[in-house]
Image 1 (cartoon, rainbow, N blue to C red):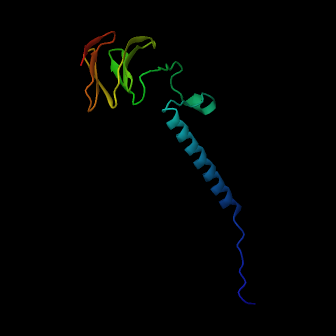
Image 2 (image 1 turned 90 degrees about the horizontal axis):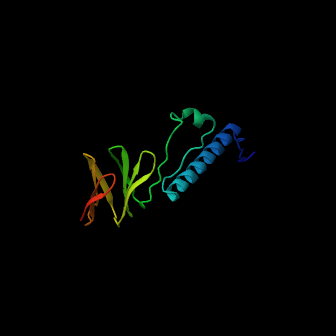
Image 3 (image 1 turned 90 degrees about the vertical axis):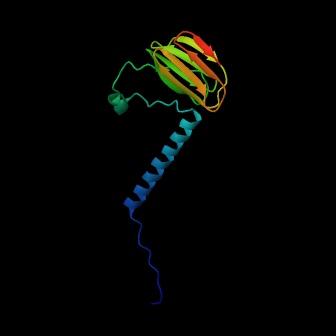
Length: 138
């Protein structure tokens, strides 16, 4: 007669919702960790729904070897990249047109009139180049 404590039976729908949320949360954390480790170079699988959502069947993938902190810019039909290990220019077919290795800590790039300037923000390194050659190095 005293103080009997009665437990409410757990709602199975609530347990299922909690379990589903926990699973989605863990998968999302693992995906983010993998993205950070691989420097953001992830792609979704091209099957089923993902294939239907892709708008272009002929997507090109460019691989720049300029280190970390990559920044990209359009250079009159070519793609210029600056990173911690220098600059690189690829044409639209993905062929390398220019590579100039040098060290930058905070790379930046700006293009105009068929020329580009890559510089280390707060640093002392500057390169001016077009799609085929380095014009000036300071």
